[in-house]
Amino acid sequence: MTKFILVGFEQSSPSTRALLFALFLALYSLAMAMNGLIIFITWTDPRINSPMYFFLGHLSFLDVCFITTTIPQMLIHLVVKNHTVSFVSCMTQMYLVFCVGVAECILLAFMAYDRYVAICHPLSYAQIMSWQVCMSLVSTAWFFGLINGIFLEYMSFRNPFCKDNHIENFFCEAPIVIALSCGDSQFSLKMIFADAIVVLLSPMVLIVISYARILASILSRASSSGRGKTFSTCASHLTVVIFFYTSAMFSYVNPRSTHGPDKDKPFSLLYTIITPMCNPIIYSF
Image (cartoon, rainbow, N blue to C red; front, side, top):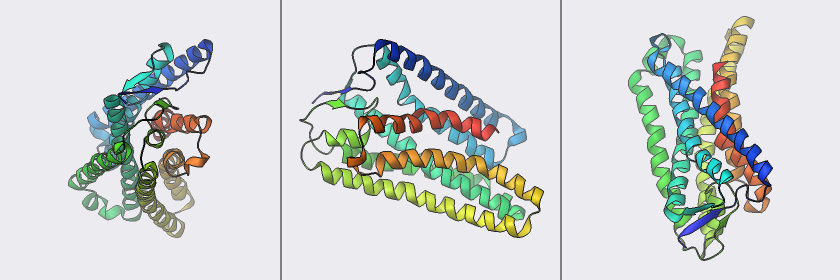
């Protein structure tokens, strides 16, 4: 097999595809503009030169990378009849989705740790979250994303493909592609599932521990006004975590028997375009 066909929204009527094109183009443009603005501000304005905004700038950069790997291709396929993608293009897209997605999972955990240090250890915050530490944490997120992407890419394409080449989604998503392969696809799916458990749940444990300690700290020490300020500071991060992790868990942790085109596409849209668009809005507030 040398190419795949992305079914996407091929079954929709021309008027529906035109409406979807206008909608997704507007969402994509909005997400790129807002994330780009946050990147520009956090990396150029010295008045917000703190670890929290440093991490936020990198999160926006990851969102820009993430959304660009899938949405432009989907927009093209909404207006042209040829929905084929080469084998290499599919592999490249899948690797980038893996790499950026894993890096974002880990970065969200580090952002929770940053909030924990800022709220529970304010006097030591500058020493604990030094610029060397912040750079190390961001580098760690990217490193694990790159390495994990190689492993997931190998598991996705280890078997030959000799079945149907139609992918029932608008981008090359691993579980769907693996199901099209010959040989022991169940082993690859189980390894993807195990990796998703580790990649999603390990950062989630750090996030839960960080916010449990934050909650215990503010309930025992802060005044009512201080509690409100702290909750408002942390609520944005928790909202983003819930959006991202819920959609990712459905796509990669749920059993394949619960999946289907009508279920996969909405969740894929949630974490490929809705979450990257909502992140800057949530954090801006």
